[in-house]
Length: 350
Image (cartoon, rainbow, N blue to C red; front, side, top):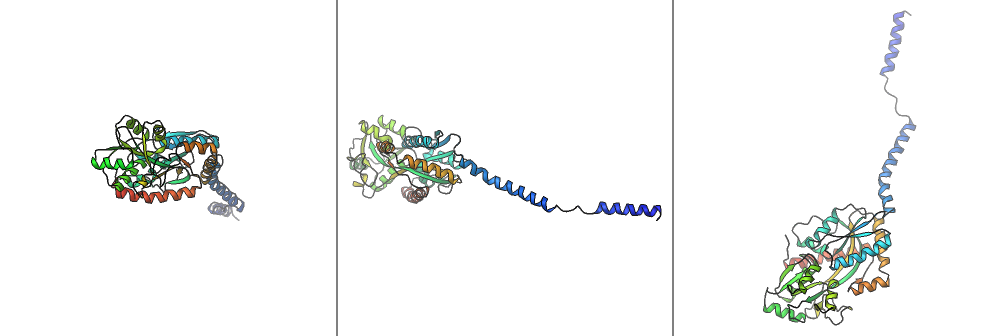
């Protein structure tokens, strides 16, 4: 073989070596890569679960949709205190009053669903979507029910500026002076607002609505004589009634309240009238089930305490408790009920 042939052979081998495609991954390399991918994939799901197992490892925020002094605030703080003891972390009440609870509801709907933002809610939760023209959340789909804490009847109470001593007399005064009797509520779309609108409709009277940012400011003006009458939660009204500063005329439950056996049910004068408010805890949709179960268990356990039941009864509230599913049924049923009431009343808030 000549030197040129030798060079051609060498060059050919070299060329073939260079142009040969890269060898595929070895079986062991493919297996290792697959294991790494699976591990990363599993870790992405394990982290939320791990966070739920260590919940809570920092303070929890309990949003309340009304300012201090009202039923939501009073009962919310009782619930927060019980949760703080049960969870071993501080549960901080965050009052976000305004728009009949709409602002607080929107804040909760947008919150991270990690269990560190909870919402102490009530009937406005299912009233507002029918009352307001623009609502940015779905009252059912955007929240996870946790527990119904209590049920509370509302109370019709009158101040010094209204001479009426009974529900019948309130109706008589309103009929004699159409639109001239002012009634106050905890805010447009609140349970007190719609409860009075239902009363007006069933009693066939006309009264003028004056909305407040919570029951606390409303009571202040009632004591000052600016507001004649209200239907509001019995919780903040009770101390004023017992002190003789306001007069209890009726309760909104189907029968008389054990806390006020001498105060008739409004239904005794207006047959079929009934409004019972509920207060409970919901969380943003997507909150881990383990977190929901933990919060539910702690509050159910607290509601078994005779001391807590006595404290709630003193506020005219009845302990309820139960499963998240049971509370979900209550929310859905009242959503449908208040849709009809709002439509019939013609109430609307822009």
